[in-house]
Length: 411
Ligand code: B12
Ligand SMILES: Nc1nc2c(ncn2[C@@H]2O[C@H](COP(=O)(O)OP(=O)(O)OP(=O)(O)O)[C@@H](O)[C@H]2O)c(=O)[nH]1
Ligand SMILES: [Mg+2]
View 1: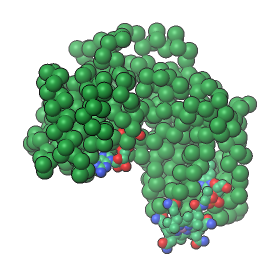
View 2 (view 1 turned 120 degrees about the vertical axis):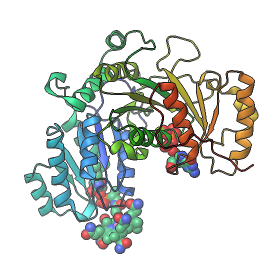
View 3 (view 1 turned 180 degrees about the horizontal axis):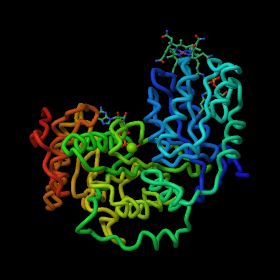
């Protein structure tokens, strides 16, 4: 039986973890319950991948399979649970995920009779109003800790997802052998690492870039590896990057969240092995790797020395709130990044930030262009220009019909 860490305990964040995907169904905006539950489960040592509210059954099943989740937890308050939970089970079956259990809650909106009907239909468990969070976390740990099924039992995204899970749980030495040395390859997908402070808009920007990949290329797939920090005490984590990943709901996108599990570089220790598995699958044209929110001396993709680079190109994303010119002199990655984006250019401080960053990059004498973006709006010309630059560097065909243009920031 797995042990549940109590909130604030100092359980080391290493080793296998129960990974739960949580979501709120379509036509339901009641997300405060699941937000609390996510946090409490993470504080008790579980890794929680949160998909968001107003989610379709198909999107939930796709995410559960790509995340190789141990189980899916639904928080449903809209009264449609009898139909919706069954639909999620059906979509999981259709995606090689019939073995992924579904459970959930909805306070008083799910009656005991409804819960019995859902259990008869295959739902594992319903948590009623008043169930203590410790009890919920304990039950989830007990029921869903499972040995990894061999990779050979699965195909497609499920097989890739399970192989990544196995790399996450493997001892460091085995993982290193699997990942091998990383060099720029003449074939295989181009890999782009995206780093920047917490909340700068990395995930939102990746999503907008993904939409341009999908729009401008009729075939081909893209993979996204999104790293988020583990809780230093309990070892649990809230893996929240999927919330911003609207376009990951396309079958041409493989999205996988990774918790750092105490690895201090800004990426999971399994990220290099996961990258190699993605490359080896032969399925993808482009891979984005998102670091956790980084600090001034971070170099998650090793572009400043200290070993071989982990990716082909690095994009550093800053928001206008980095501080001032002194702070810009301290951000080590401003030297090594191939591309720099100033995101949130709808912010009143953007004009000053753009001027300061332009001067800072000019001092580098690396010819790094500055891209001014507003990832929070669709069809932003600054994101178009960034996509065109990345696509050109990656050798992908230019974005058809989309003019490369630099966003104008009013001075
Ligand atoms: C807070 C709330 C709101 C807030 C939502 C804020 C937010 N962002 O979430 C606001 C005020 C915005 C709101 C709006 C509405 N609400 Co409202 N709302 C509630 C309320 C009071 C509490 C729900 C809650 O968060 N509970 C807190 C959780 C932690 O506790 P719990 O529900 O007891 O859940 C336990 C377990 O079930 C378990 N659990 C729950 N989910 C999950 C998931 C997992 C994975 C796990 C492990 C466990 C678990 O955890 C708890 C542990 O004890 C309920 C009434 C009620 N008492 O339930 C109505 C209620 C859900 N709302 C209702 C309605 C009708 C609405 C509106 C349609 C009202 C309107 N006409 O505009 C809108 C719709 C909003 C939308 N866009 O969907 C109805 C639903 C009726 C139905 N389905 O038949 C309810 C039941 C009120 C009522 N009696 O009429 N609402
Ligand atoms: N105003 C504004 N908000 C933005 C923009 N881009 C992203 N955001 C918002 O900023 C918040 C953080 O965005 P994310 O994409 O999650 O940021 P992140 O860098 O991935 O965050 P972490 O992964 O936690 O480090 C979200 O609420 C976004 O909607 C933008 O261009 N303008
Ligand atoms: Mg993010």
